[in-house]
Image (cartoon, rainbow, N blue to C red; front, side, top):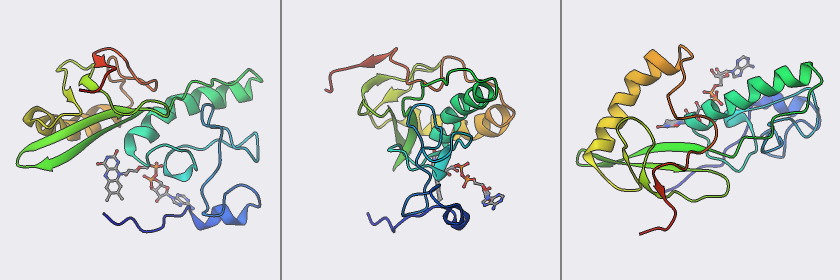
Length: 166
Ligand SMILES: Cc1cc2nc3c(=O)[nH]c(=O)nc-3n(C[C@H](O)[C@H](O)[C@H](O)COP(=O)(O)OP(=O)(O)OC[C@H]3O[C@@H](n4cnc5c(N)ncnc54)[C@H](O)[C@@H]3O)c2cc1C
């Protein structure tokens, strides 16, 4: 697999000190506050965080970001709870897919995803492929309209996981 060099948006470079050499925005990895300007917060692909550049990361970061903008404006201590939570379906072909769930400190674990169906983690299955297909509906009809996914929040869930890899 070849991944070309990635970079941030060109306008980041026009704000001295805001971005790193590649144009990504260095932020505190738990509060998402810019290291250069306290009144700037960043999420998603724009950040220089050691997290995946993935839709789930941007989504989970969003909860902490909104909370912290409110707190910053109210002069309250910031919420330092973002843990790098990432969830990804990976299509593996032949009607199967993997589902992985991890954060800054924990590699993907085996077990079951703590949703209503209990999709298998770190294991190819047809159920995960259907889960990925169903997620398209969920994305457009539930996530985009701002509804929470029950039991799945910005912090990586531990329920249903086995800590020892098999
Ligand atoms: C081919 C591909 C496949 C992917 N597949 C997956 C996947 O299966 N699962 C997954 O989790 N993630 C996937 N990703 C990653 C995911 O799409 C990104 O991580 C996610 O979209 C990042 O969200 P974001 O809001 O940070 O950035 P973006 O989604 O890039 O949003 C940034 C927005 O800012 C706008 N913008 C830029 N400059 C300006 C400006 N000057 N003024 C105003 N607006 C501006 C852009 O038009 C854009 O709409 C994939 C990415 C790619 C490219």
